Image 1: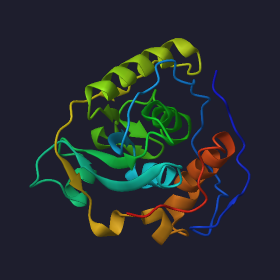
Image 2: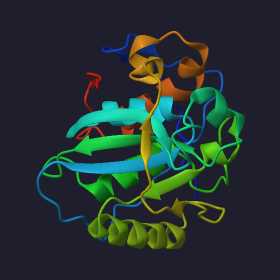
Image 3: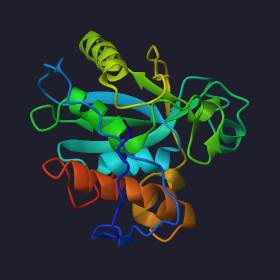
Image 4: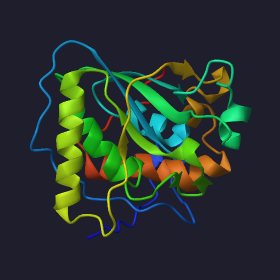
Length: 223
């Protein structure tokens, strides 16, 4: 069953954002993973879940995350530009590259956060107002351990009964990740009053604080 959470207006100190959207995506009570990741040392994860501004914002407010970079996964270097990718004519997905400390936040917990407050795993090639294959939801494992955890978690999600529709998240082989243009980096922090941020992305961070208080970080981790 879908968990419909009424998100109160919350002041986000680091970005001076007040989450008062007239419309926002639903959040979900994604299950705690039964297959937990066993990693040590700083690790890298790549996720796609619609517009990278919001996913970057969520993970930039997650404890244990050291760095989040917005970019384009797949496709070619020549076409890795916002104008081309957002037109839907390339094979890229808007994605984020996350550097994290698994002693603080595990890979399976990042997956739980992603599909609780970041992206609806039942919508094929779109999230919220954004439509096209460039907005697909995908997990891009960087290690065999991550692949095994991701596969187990998607199976668990499908059995959980949390979502009314089938899970359509893809597990994609790791390809080249191209950093997005500089103005996309730390976009939520730099543009707290942007209309899209206020309506669609600030509520994701507010939901992170509400649903994962032990993993929420009030400051925005830049870089």
